[in-house]
Image (cartoon, rainbow, N blue to C red; front, side, top):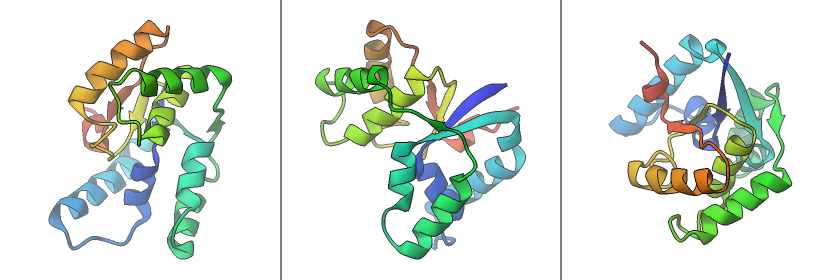
Length: 156
């Protein structure tokens, strides 16, 4: 079974109130469809980073986010993942203010996860950044997971 790392933006879109913004509402609908149709075709994981981010903010919304991920296995932020995250950040190919995003990639790569599922298109599901970071991961001896949105992982 293929593996998926559920990044925090995916979880947020899954449980948030329907948006009046048409693009956000479409992303929310796609997220819900992936959750209902495709989730059981993958082994899904989170990390402590996801748990910490999900628990932040409005208490009511945080409770919804943390509740939906409570039963998923938690990937560790190992020394290897920390080293990879530092290599990503020090490469100059990734924004230094996006250290948690680098950590998401590193945890998924160090745990040999197939896909990183996200709606963060600024730092994660971004074709230019993916290309650059993939070379960093390869240089460090890791395979970067396929970073994609739920729309891209809907299957055939």
